[in-house]
Amino acid sequence: MGFLKGKTAIITGGGRAVLNDGSCGSIGYGIATAYAKERANLVITGRNLQKLEDAKEELERLYGIQVLPVQADVNAGTDNEAAVANVVKRAIDTFGRIDVLINNAQASASGVSLADHTTEQFNLALYSGLYAVFYYMKACYPYLKETKGSVINFASGAGLFGNYGQCAYAAAKEGIRGLSRVAATEWGADGINVNVVCPLAWTAQLENFEKAYPEAFKANVKMPPAGHYGDVEKEIGRACVQLASPDFKYMNGETITLEGGMGQRP
Image (tube, rainbow, N blue to C red):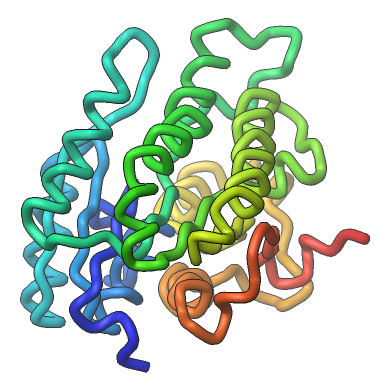
């Protein structure tokens, strides 16, 4: 498409992860690869510095772009606003612009019932998800206004449909959806569009789960009507490329379910 060449995208949770066959193994890295193929320069964040450095090496070598890896984490008890401000400052110092913000990173204690959830577990999801999105959106806003950029936030079917054992995760994700709708209303006049993706994709985490616990995997992980799980680069990452394109600029405040037919709702 070419519209991303020379532009800058921030992708949280963008460290390198691969499947056994060597293809992209996480949603963040799938998005980073899709954007790299469109010649966008990238700022990738995460907790694991080695995964970020591995992503930088591979993406720069394969696609001739620039990648700025920044180790960053949003969690309870730290100066999260300063940590995010540092990421954004380094992005501007390096590339001079921000065109796309993709809030993908999220941690949670899945499988714990609401009655058994601790405050620490609840905070883990809220800080890494909802608070992180809030801080990144605030910090990036002046620069997205300059470029009339796009924000793509990640939510989940866990929030849409109330999945068992995911109360904190669902709460964080539904908070992100509400925040995104408000931003779409407030920032639309600035030329910024804000949309939400709820994905279902085949990742290294699921691959390892299937290998280690085949019976539990069979009982808990359902195949979507499409007959396969989403490819993190081709079916999630490519959709995120489209959502930042001029062709989709009028789409604003929407939630898009990329779940192969499982995310149907009125």
